[in-house]
Image: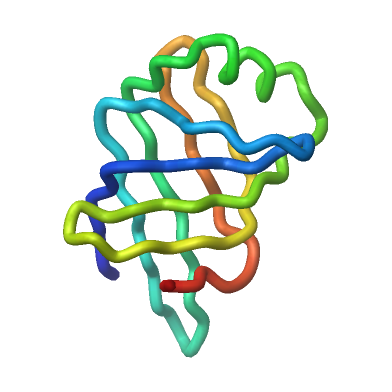
Length: 100
């Protein structure tokens, strides 16, 4: 398992790109039995309206574009699961995470 601290996240949903402002976020890469899973835990999400929109929407699929503190960039398809009471979100990867 590898954990990577993120400094920036942008998401594409409903044909629009939007920055996801946060206090902390970490990308977790899990390699298990030949498969590689990934997810992002985001805390201190400052855009409450965005969390509310995802909380009410049935279409939570996004394209994720993230930049790590060390400068590496990643992108992939995922699902954004908001946690409105805690101003947080879990982004669960769907398929390959590409490092660009």
